[in-house]
Each structure stands twice: as C-alpha cells, then as structure tokens.
Length: 295
Image: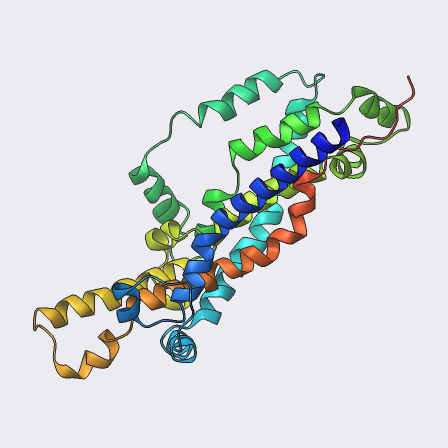
C-alpha cells in the first residue's frame, strides 16, 4: 500500500507541475497567436487559434524595423559585458571570501553602502558625458551595469561554501592566487557563474535607459531602445492623424497594426534569451560538486 500511495502522490505532483507549466506558458502562447492576427482581430476577440496574417505581419516587421542592426548593437554590448562582469564579480567575491584578507570587512561594507545611497542622476550624467566624454560611445552602455553588488553577494556565498582545505592545499602545492581562483575555485562555482551570467545578460539585453541618456546616433541604438523609439513614433503619428494634424502622405506609416507589431517584436526580443537559457539551465538544478578532501 505504501508503494501504491507513493506512486499516486507522485502522479498528482507531476500533474500539478504540468498544469503550472501550462499556466506559465500561456502568456507566451497568447503572444505568439496574436502575432499572427490583425490589430482589429486582437481588439475584437480572444482566441488561441492562429490567424492568416502571419506573413503580412512579419513582412511589416522586417520592412519598417532594422532589427538586425539593433540586435547586433545589443550583442556587441551584452556579450563582452557579461564576460567582464562575471570575471570582476568572481575576483572580488574570491577576495572578500578569504578570511586571511585583512580588509575584507571594510571592503564588504563599502560595497554594501553603495546599495543604500547613490550620487543621483544629475551628477552621474555629468560624470558620464562631461568628465568621461562617453556620449555616443558604447562604453556608456557597458560601464553602468558592469558591476553589481547583488551578483557579488551570490558569488561570495558560493565561494564561502567551499572547504578552506582546498585553498590550503593549493597554497601547499605552490599555486598563486590567480591560479587558485581560475583552476580550483571557478570550476567549482559554475552554477554561480551561470546564474550571474544569465542575470547580467538579461540586464544588458533589456537595457534601454542608458541608451536614451547617452546615445543620440540611431545607428548605435541597441535593440530595446530602437524598438521603443519606433513604436512610440508610430503611436505619435496615429495621434496626429486622429487629430487631423498630418497629411495623407503619412497614412501608410501610421496604419501599421501597432498591437500586432508589439507581439511580433516581443517574440524577436525574447528569442535570443530563450535560446540562451538551455545552455545554462542545467547549472540551476546542479548542486556544487566538490571532490573528496582527505583531512
């Protein structure tokens, strides 16, 4: 009976998890279906059956939006920034996790203090534009998110969970601090590196605010800000048309199906992240495996 009861509970649990997965996937399914419909259909009815406007919608998306340029600009910033941020976070966390580092508490307080107070937007803007001269420069998109205290705390907690005997054994074998970090510590904190790397990649991929502040050249716009500008432009034209403030020569531009475009563009924006997630997904469920250490 115990065996049958266990199987029944396990089956119920699996059914509940499947239902929960369906609920979580429902908004994405609805988004994909609406990307195949016209704007009037979206406003009139709700359905999960795809329509016949798929070809027209995507033709419109690639005709009026230079998606590849925006995606390339985002990748140029997101990929090196993710690697650099993970690298700096790992090095800093390793130093703060070492109990033989005399000033680790002072530095920890310094990092924690920055999460409570900031200099404000105006001094920050003046620093980036006037002092550093980063207007219309990709460094203006890279530097603001390059270091995160939250990512540092994640990395530090993983490193502190490692046995100190590993570090001591590396010292006895003559390893330098860099070799200890890169050949011993980093292979053991792959789950933390994958988690932090995904957080960083999402932050850079979704960033449009820094582009709005520091980037004025359209050919340098990252994907998110590029789409933000285009969608807002279409909405502004539609309002002008409704008020009779524009002539008929722009009717073709303002008659674009805005709601459908938003759905189609959301698929484009989330696509790379969805494809990248399976590469790091196994590290979210994998615990830290530490080899046996003989005492």
